[in-house]
Structure formats: C-alpha cells, structure tokens
Image (tube, rainbow, N blue to C red; front, side):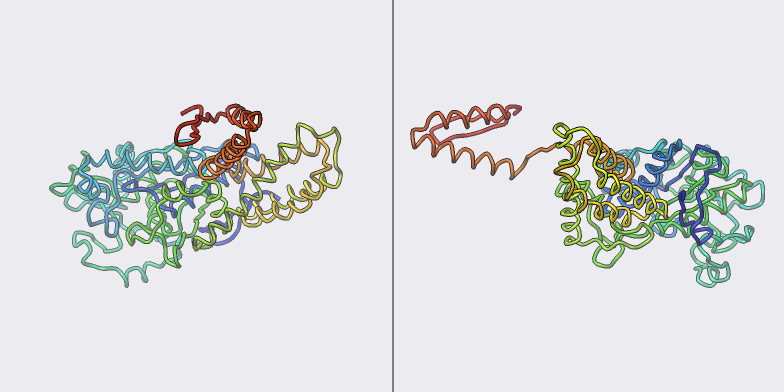
Length: 481
C-alpha cells in the first residue's frame, strides 16, 4: 500500500514519496530549553520516532533533524516580553547558556529513557546566528523586510500566500491585531526577524544592524534549509506551532526564493484533566517524575494508544490500564523467547497464518497515517491465537514469532528494548521474596533441619544474595553492594 500521511498544508491524506529516491529528510521543531520537560513534550518525539523507525524498516536512509532553541522565546507574542531563558537564568543565578545546557540534557535524558532515537542532527539556534543573519539580509534585499531602530521585521502583506498553512486570512488577522504591540512596525501583522537588544539583555550577538538576537521563527527556517536543503520531505511539530511559527517559516523561506517543506505534519496536545498541558499555566506533569515512578515503555505504550492527530487526555487510571496492557504484551514476548531453546524443529501452520495476518494488519495501520492505536490492536488480536498455540509451537515458527515482535514491536513502535526483555526482580518484590525465603530458612533452623537451612542460604548466594546471621536475626545484601 505504501505510506500515506495527513498533510496539514493540503488538508488531506496524501501518498508519501520522498523527493530523493531512497532518502528521507525530516525536520521536527524541538524544545525551548528553559525548564524540565513535561509529559506533553514526550508526544512529538515518540510520534515522529515511530515515523522514522517505519521508514528505516522500509530501507530508507533518514536524516532526522530536530532543533534545540537555546536563544529563548519571548514571553509575549514572540516580538516582545522577557526572554524565557534569561528569566530562568536570573531565577537560578546561572548564565543563560548554563540554563540552556542544563535543560537540553534534561530533555535528552527523558526522551532517551522513552527509547526515542537521537536526532541525526540536533542543531542549536545559538550556533547558527550567521545563517539567520544571512537569511534576514536576503529578505531585506528582496524588499520583504525592513529595519526599525536596529530591529528587522518581515512584511507579511508583501507575501500574499501568508496563511495558506493555517487557513487564516490576512483580513481576519488584521481585525484581531493589536496595533499597540509595536509602534515601530509598519503593520501589526509583521513579525521580527531580528531584535535589537535592549539594555540589560544578556543574550546578544553582533549583526549589521547592531547588537541583538534572532526572532523566534527565523531559526528553524535557516537550520532546516542548511541541513536538509530545498524541498525537503517533511516538516513536523505540535499543532500549536502551526500558527504563527510554521506559517512564518514558510513565508520567510518562500519569500527568500527557496522551495521549503513538501509535507507538513502536526501532532495534537496532551491534556491533563481536559486542559492543555503547558509550563505557562502550571497544568503539567513533569516527565522525570513519571519516569521515576513508572516503566518508561509503559508510558510510551500509553501515548501510542491515541492517534497523534487527536488530543490525548492523560489520566492516572489510563496510565495504570496501559501498564497492564503493556505487561501482557511484554510477558508474552518473554515467554516466546524462553521457549525457543527447547522447541522442536519445524513450523506450526496455524500460527504462521496468524503471523501473516498480524504483519498485514500492523503495517496497514502504520501506513495509514501512523495509526498506532490500530497497530497495537493488531497485536492484541494476535495474542489469543498465539497463547492457544504456544505450548505446541515448533521452533521455526517460534523464531519467526520472536522476530515479528522484535521487528514490529521494537523496530517500529520502539516498545521492547533489550533491557525490558530480561527477567529481573528488584525493589519491593525482591525484598518480599528474600524475606519469605529467610522466614522459611528460620523455620528450618528451629526444626533443626540444618541441611534445608544451608541449602536455602547456598541457593540465595548463587543468585548473588549474601545472607549473614547476626544477633538481630538474618541480614542480607546483594553481592555487588
């Protein structure tokens, strides 16, 4: 069938064919790194990670670029207000770039825990100031921009196609615009390409127009063109970036004479109690807190249960249900692997047919605009047949079953990294099991059954658990401690 994606620009599902055969270029808008990531920041990376994994599975070479905004958006409409990174630097008494570095790694640690592949390139806005200045100079030369008091603004009305991504019309935008936002603008619709640094603004760079810093939108246009070239395949990001950020990106690129992204994809919000999760409102759950308390792969599984273009309402009950569903899949995969060593040679035709259906239905779901809920449903439809046939399954079919779990479940959905496939006991469960065995050992000692008592101790020692008898009773520790 081939991959079909919903193109926001065309407002319909379209067949995806890369501009260069065998190669795919994807640009995803990354975070502004001024605080720890929340759950909402996990959805985009996971969605586009599945897209990337599918393309790799199909044999494409994928250049996946996702930026880090370490210059800092302003707190108002991207043209005025306080720089978010600079404000955080004052709060934490750090240098702005110290803040950016701290929260860049906080973000990468979180998405790595969620088994998201690292970007091919993760360009930082602060490292691409020359490219942003060069693009601004080009727009000035072509008459699409103008200078006011050391700041450069884009003339929105000079680009008649403005609004084609979001569907917004200039007349509607003009009616709702606040003229007082910037008196120096020719038109309140115009947006900043470069801002003159006010006194006390720490993050500043030299430019032909004096010291300043880039506007919000120019960084992604400059960096995506630099690393992916004109007419690259897919530009993606959150639905809240569709306007004004992505609309402005298109205007800047095309006004400068460049062919920009061929397709646009947007994922929807993660809601908490029915409201958008956002740092500005405090309505959020920090990602690191979730990852400490819950299996990261269960959280990834939960996020994939809702189609990326639909809003997802996060609930604790939903997360617990997802953990149970994920555990069911994981345990079945583990059992398949465990049976491989003792299975007799040959195939199991009935299970082979079920595997054929799973692969067909799974790929049809992914190729239909990344329908991960339907892809997961294909797995769960397969489980009853697998569980019925598993006790008598032959070795060749079991190997294929394990390969299908690996290729589809891990290779495309990213749900089964090797660490979760290892049977490991830790935490309260480990403590409870050891306590139970020590109680049985004490009962044996009281009954003078020293052979049994010693056997329990020896078996625990073989498992890496050291038992020491003290006046207060038996104590244990792990051999590696």
